[in-house]
Length: 270
Ligand SMILES: [Zn+2]
Image (cartoon, rainbow, N blue to C red; front, side, top):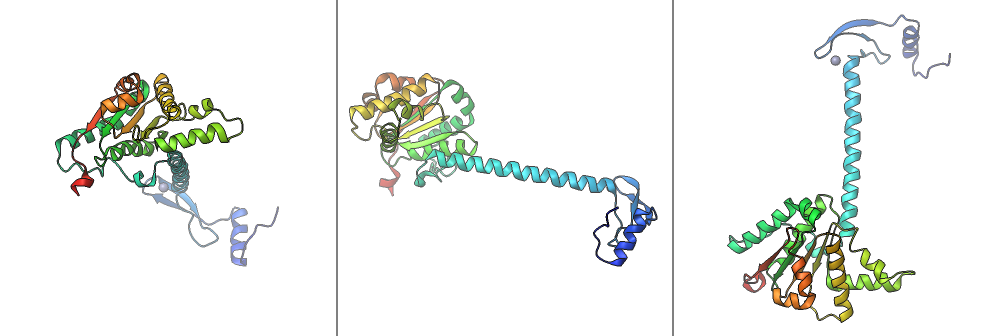
């Protein structure tokens, strides 16, 4: 038999008596598990209730598994957050920190956005989008990104991006990469995203090509029944002129809606 690794002669002699069957045992009683036999260990302590030891180990294993699962989830959320491309200034805009100032219409708009988050599974099922229109400073981007941030926290795949950047990305993917194509570039904004938030739609007079790209993305998402949120400075008529009536109409399907934010700008008010 291999010599056990021991430290002191006392420990060694104790261990050999354990191995020889001469261990010092005693009967004890556990509050939870009742009677048990315990052994005096080399360190001079009694071994304690074997069932309690097992329970402790199982609990520790579970805690480790929970930690690992939590870490995996945190890593995944971090990854989703990076992929979401939400501009820094909107990363902390939430529905909770949207100020309604007891203004009825703001409260209505906020409630509609909260409902959108609560019912997102249904919106995702039916492709229900949202159009948020209003002039500068009404908080429409705050509301849209507030929806996006809430859904990101729930593990949905979200991207929030303004149109300028979207067009840059398409150009980059379509023309700068080897083997890239417009079709492939557009695909990146359809299937892989549960929700696409497009900010600053119609704010600029884009080229026909840019407008066509935007139309195609919204249209492809519509065909795939994937929700899109459009944020625009233009009013409903202006947006219709910019994107076409068909697209704007389609945004209302599947539980979709248009919110016109028509209160005075907080920037002007301040
Ligand atoms: Zn016990």
